Amino acid sequence: MRNKIVAGNWKMNKTSTETGELLNELAAKLPDTQAEVMVAPTFVNLTAAVSALDESIIEVIAQNMHFAESGAYTGEISADMLLDIDIDTVIIGHSERRASFGETDEILAKKVKTAIEKEMRILFCFGEQLEDRKSDNHFKVVESQLRNVLFSLDASAWTHIVLAYEPVWAIGTGETASPEQAQEMHAFIRKTITEAFDSSVADKVSILYGGSVKPANAKEIFSKPDVDGGLIGGASLKADDFVEIIKAI
Ligand SMILES: O=C(CO)COP(=O)(O)O
Image 1: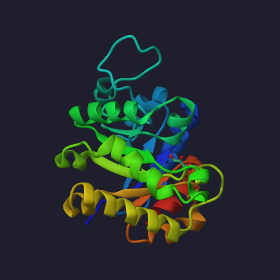
Image 2: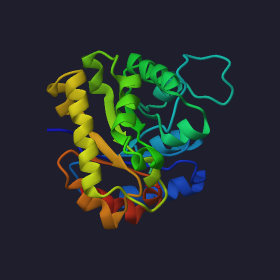
Image 3: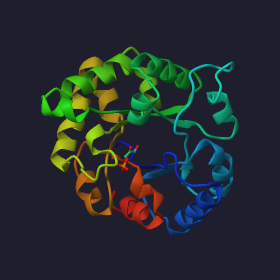
Image 4: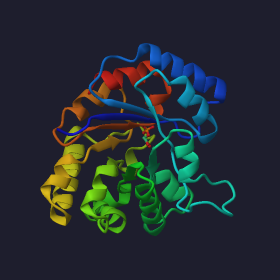
């Protein structure tokens, strides 16, 4: 049985006051759920978020981290800094970091290596661009994103990995992959991991879908057998919407 996960990626949204308000509302409205629930506020609000959710099952996670232990990397955050404030799960490889901050597969592989060495859990994001899908290259692109970053890991490292398939054309656009498209890709991802490792690795890894998930479409997407939850952007910024999405799992 794989873990079901609903994670909210808040991106560059919410001041400290707004973060406190949203977390209080979420904690108060959180339904009983079999899913692991996570939220990723901005770095400056992580410490306060961890304190605010002390009594809650909601886990606070980070949106990014650097691969280096420490040093001259102005503006960056290390694994130890996160662990020191009780954060041990980190999003790596989000398409916005790839597109706007030049994060290549090579850089992402270093980040994943560091996170595993630090025994952190990784929410690894990947997904094709619209052109890739139009030219029927989406499976090839996704396979190479996985291969370049994750396939040289030891099989044992996969207990640290959660995958988040986020087709770039569906992020923040209101356009969602259809439940069938999501299932088709998630099944392909599982098959690819089975071939690279074995079915015990592939069957255990949770694969989340991300890209314009909202209360109206969450249930259908989550009903697919290879979709183990969602990574939610815009709809995670409103407690009522996020709660409805959690209920859909
Ligand atoms: O990028 C996402 C989550 O990481 C998805 O964002 P939206 O849900 O706003 O499309």
